[in-house]
Image (tube, rainbow, N blue to C red; front, side, top):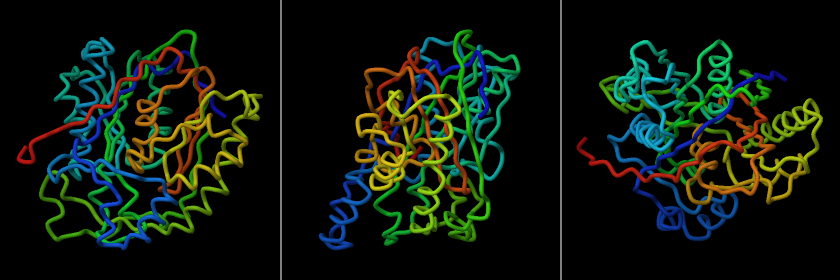
Length: 339
């Protein structure tokens, strides 16, 4: 376990595309009984889906603008922009550089991308916390994906599962706060969630065109998750000298509802301790934890766990106190398709 002192989360904002798809509408393609079975298992009733020209950066930009406005922080006070995504605008340059300019953040700020998926929020928070530990005061962590663009039509393992979202988190110097981390990686399972072949020969011509179809071995991913994640959570609790009943909230990556129930049971959490947003937003990859933070209201945030896991294969958990954190309402972004 790694603990970083004097760091906390000041505010979290999230944006989703205004357009959404109800999974029951896919009964024509899959058959009503098959769709009902899938919805019952994965727990996804609807998903917000971006238009072709709306990117992860657009959604994160909207979330960041809301956060900067509502949290009353000046853009010139932000010292670093960290963009975490698997669906960046271009192969190069880094999307964080583009967002730094659009947000009028000073040219003295660091700006860089991290290519991570389902555990990306947890990884991004450790990077941001480390920057605070190095002497910075305010880090803007932008985490988002438009995974729906990677889904192959007709793929029952992914088509009803994934939605799109962008989020912004302000990580700040806080004298009386700390965050404790436990992370891991097992690259031997990289093939279990992969996008490896370009969809078209024109894959590098511009925004949002450089994507490949997502391939996922659901059985292997489920096995990996049940093996690694409960041990991750239980080991962190042991290191912290806490028991499951002392945790106010455990915000898991919203992989699917069936999986979340099993993870909760293995770590002895009651359902009231585990917020759920996958029913309304689907699996939004790295954005799912901050999206869920904004989507649910809790009585207490003092003992909170944030747990990410998936593509890589990678995983991570954080213990933090979010009592002083501002959670903004989720914004539905409506951009003209011709932008």
